[in-house]
Length: 117
Length: 110
Image (cartoon, rainbow over all chains, first blue to last red; front, side, top):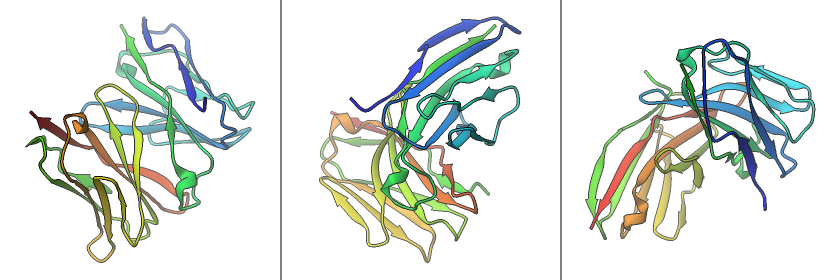
């Protein structure tokens, strides 16, 4: 089954304790992205990757790191989480971006609800 | 002004009603437009792509008006299962970045 797998689904942690949220897709997609979603602010892009070893900052990259060593995986790393990073996080992938057609369709993971105490 | 703006609603409609949402975009260079559906605390899922000629998929019709810079979504014969938030998305700029609206909430009541 074609899917984006994101783990964990729920995570409660404390300030400063490094964590990683994993994301994996099995569709051979070139493009992957991380979003956070907060009430009243909508979906905001954290980082994205157009292909292996190519990553770029989105709108809210501060406090986050990513890597794209393999095509299928795009982990999100919080080196020192803070309470303002409490949010609902989504990983997404698409065949390509910028094509201006349905190949831009984004497939989302089921989300990670992160609480930083 | 936000790049993509939507009326947040909520729109409360009875089953069987026809409801329409509009979404305005500010970047005239926008090329691609999409409607995504999101259920509460779940991941967004693509509902429809929006083409220049408009497109229809069952009870759903999407239209693009480039002159006025808005896209619309029409839902006919609303079902209880249509209750969700509908997100408008456009793709614009040199890096073809996706710009998301905040969503329009729809509640279909029995």
